[in-house]
Amino acid sequence: MHPHDAQVSVVVIGYDDATHVTDAVRSALAQGGIVREVIAVDDCSTDGSPALLDALAAEDPRVKVVRRTTNSGGCGTPRNDGIDAATAPYLMFLDSDDILPPGAVDALLMAAVAHATPLAAGLCVRRELPSGREVPWQPELYERPALVSRPSQRPRLVDDTLCVNKLYRTDFLREHGIRFPEGRFPYEDFVFTARVLAAGPSIALVPDTVYVWHVRRSAQRLSISLDRAAIDNWKARMEANRQAYEILLGAGEKRLARAARAAFLDRGLRMYARELPLRDAEYRDEWWRLTRAYLSDFDAADLAQASVSGRVVAQVVLAADQPRDLHRLKELAAHPARLAPPYATAEDGAPVWSADLPQVRLEHLLHRPMGHLPVAVDAELHPRARGTRLRLRLHELYGRVENARPHRVDMAFVQREDDSRVGLAATAALRPDAELGGWTAEAPVGLAELADGTWDLKLTLRFDDGTSRETTAHAVEGPGLLGRRMVPSVRHGVLLTQPYATHSGALALRVASGVRGVTAVVGRRLRRLLHWR
Image (tube, one colour):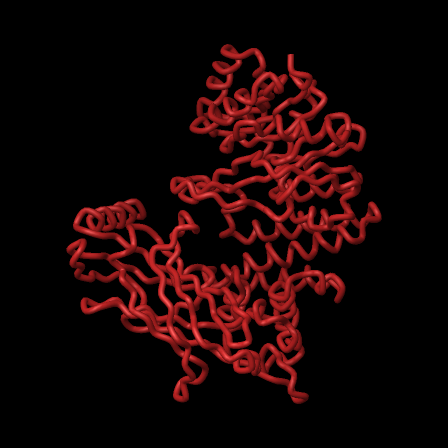
């Protein structure tokens, strides 16, 4: 018998998720004899999930079903029920719409036992469905095996707010009274993770993929992380961050507390700022008011811990008493950041956000390495029957671009579903443009080389001083620049192309080829229109 047999309880929580819960439970059972029990906590489902769980329990005695008699309204209470019911020395959590990949529990338990640590953590990947594209979550933390004797030695641990990619010693959670917030409490992971880190455990980190987080953007009921259209979601995120900060500060973990605020600025604030132009005026006004009030408690040291983009977005919100410069903020909050013109200066010549907000100073732009500067590039894609052209304009940035002497730009359309796949690439010289200002470049684009799907434009700017900057390009709006159009194609007969601006304002391109591809796109469009009616 394996020395680690039957050492782990896997707590699976679900509510009205009959479509996926069986796959989740089976992925836990498939970990082998190392799993003593799969505790399936059903949060008062009405869609047939209880019957599916009963069938799984009849099939495998390791499945133990816990039925709640009232719906908790959140994820925290059923997870707490699972902690109470666990009988194994270790436990981990699994949501009903996700899965554990093969060997996940074994990798975490091996590390926890080898280092005698109450906590082991591994890599989570976000799998976009139905495309299957996988994006690692906080991969820098899990590049190699490591043992962290105290969380304060690696403040970036605060960035990984997930509870599901970790294995916990059961008595560690119980002895320290570490539990999730009860009831409806979105972003409960933030608070739970803060309580874990505040207890100061040693942590074993493994580079193995131990959790697959399924992202279903087209689902009828969006997950909390995707359902951001209502202001209550932003309120919940701020409240969760506030509690996490106070928990860590109360435990004397000042470095971790500051790191929690930096994570809020770098991820939460930037993500929601990118989406502000999509919201109505009522939402924007309320968001701005609430955010200013919350950020007013941040001091200079809190802001200094964040990325430049997160810090500047926060400073603009604090400096303006009502929403403003939303499209510039959207560009700055992008990944990578782009600072769009105008480029104002204060009376002393220092770079500032704008003439109206000179208190938001940008002196850091004069000293940061060229490879990290938020340079701005405009892009225009002109699909035509006689050949499509891509035109770019690189803006000056307080003399930094001119000093670096830009000489060329490498352009690539990268597939959205698989960012390692380059559909087509081109290189063009960057030349000074006396009429427009800055530097411009132009290159032909063979759209017929692109397979059907969505393609993101990625750029690498090359400078004579040997430096480079990887970035994206702002999609210029104007007559004939964005939107669907038919383009004749020798290879396919016809192409349906759609240059468009992403949520962060970057240029992207959708392509459908041939009569069949075009018909499929038109059919999907018609079905959406009929559905909304």
